[in-house]
Length: 115
Ligand code: AMP
Image (cartoon, rainbow, N blue to C red; front, side, top):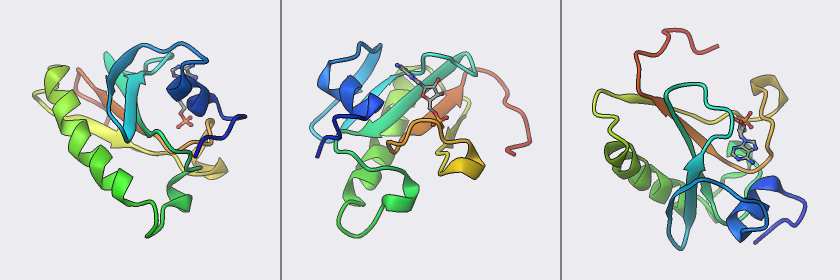
């Protein structure tokens, strides 16, 4: 289900342009507009889910699917030496877009701290 006020729903719908990497019936992947690593892309469910906090038994299949898609895209992007997967959830984690998304960061040795 789409949320017409949601930035990432608008990207999925093509109303806002994105640099698309991958798309299937369930998910959409695109480069982050403000990359924090040499390779930084986002993978999102096409249906609107606000954050990790809204994942439940009724919608969690897409999360499993996304975690199958991530390694395939990472491999295609040449992230052969590893990468980090991050999902910010809520204000304390500085989530800025309230549509579930997974950051994939790589292309260099990343920092050891996560917080
Ligand atoms: P978060 O802060 O975890 O909610 O991550 C949101 C991410 O979305 C940030 O890394 C932003 O740079 C990214 N972002 C925001 N708007 C766009 C956009 N139009 N296209 C691509 N990435 C975006």
